[in-house]
Amino acid sequence: MRKIFRIYKPFTHAGILLAAQYRVNFIFFLLGDILMCFINYFLWRAVFNSGGAQTFMGFSEADMVSYIFISFLTSTLAYSDGSYAVGEEIRDGSVVMRMIKPIRFDLAFLFQELGERVISIAIVFLPLVAGVEVFRFFATGAVQFNIVRFLLYLLSLILAYLINFYINVCYGYSAFVLKNLWGSNLLKNIIIGFLAGSTIPLAFMPPVLSEILRILPFASLTYTPVMIYIGKYDLVQILISFGLQIVWLAFFIFLQQVIWNACVKRLSAQGG
Image (cartoon, rainbow, N blue to C red; front, top):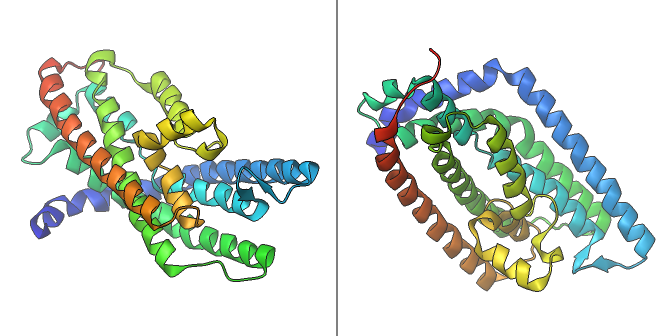
């Protein structure tokens, strides 16, 4: 493990420099996403006020607000741009430079993205968690923060990021055939965001569909960590969720290696 960190540490440093270079662009995207969170907040507040009920589908208003903002936090920290980055290197042929080096292709991108995540954590993590906990305190009249649930959330978040990364790497390899992934990547992100529970909780969907989506890997990206954080999962559900996340992570690590071995033989480049 120490050898791996020593080899790939420069990629992490490069990721930090890259994120810092485009920090203004990141901040504007972040502000847009935060604005969308507040739009969802006022939307769900109107739903609860018009309905007159204390809960909706098992969620109180405080639960729903927490879900909105923790879902945003989870999606931001577990976000991976691997499909676009991999696709661009395959498209322009620069992937060859990585192939001739004695490094693993996927790990090089992984450690570079980890460097980029440092900026995201520094900007949004502590302020958003603190804001949610302050809101929950005033909404319920009691401290809702639970250190055990928080640590389990962090573990689930790490697994969520790794699953998302390898899903995106697998999709990025399709550039060996499609050449340009820009449009299809946007569609992919929207579909995964919906299936992951970023738009609405999976619990709000029809029971059969909800159970199916919880088994699929997409629920592991957002829904599972958020439900752990807000206390909607008991110990048994948490253990089952961790098991699913580990299984899906192992599956996509294996799948990306299979796809890489098959597609690398098709390498060609467009443009320069």
